[in-house]
Amino acid sequence: MKCIDRILLIVCLISPLYGYSCSKVKRDILFQTSTINALLEGIYDGDVTFGELRKYGDFGLGTLNGLDGELVVLDGKFYQVRSDGIVNPVDSSMKTPFAVVTFHEADKTVMANKSLNLEQLEGYLDSILPSQNIFYAIRIDGTFRYIKVRSVPRQERPYPRLVDVVKNQPTFEFYDMKGTIVAFWLPEYINGINIPGYHFHFLTEDKQSGGHILSVITGDIRIQIDYTSEIHMVLPGSKEFSSVDLTKEKQKELESVEK
Image (cartoon, rainbow, N blue to C red; front, side, top):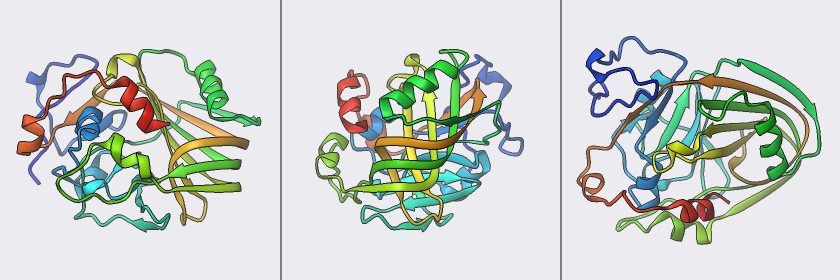
């Protein structure tokens, strides 16, 4: 694949005139393919291979072309959580329509032995984030007393919109399960580009199960937060992406899909 140069969004306002070198990858950057609004509209095919994506991060989440399951990136390895709950390693030649990755290097670590549901976990994380204006990659390792996840089934053309796909999403429940939450928190101003607030995926310690988190009750956990102030984004070059209307407000639809 050619050096990714279709679009470069640098939130810290570095001018695009400085260029972007594929040979010099900064580690403290979120790298994103496509936009969340495009995914909501059924743009399920992208151009970026996972072989290319791994150059830009060892930690992240997203999905695969055709909306073929949930993506979890942890410790430099890429995992596909299929709709039957089975986890497979992701082949480098496979592609993604939407993914966010970074090189996770913790700036803050907090130990917590608290019984927190998902809303309480979000509130607790809010209390330890230093600012509402930058990006955070959040890794949570430990034991989870209860966790409910989903994965989406692969879609066939013509692709339905995401809000319709998740109406029949398979879900899986675990009790007293060890594993890792891979999460991002992004500011409100990112709306339409990515998900404002929290986005949580999960992978069990044995790497056999996981998915997009719908509900959780935590146990003894370690939270590692990576502060990030830049985001780079590459958009699909497809006709479908070029012609889709991405101007509509989709916040309520996004909340329905996420929760």
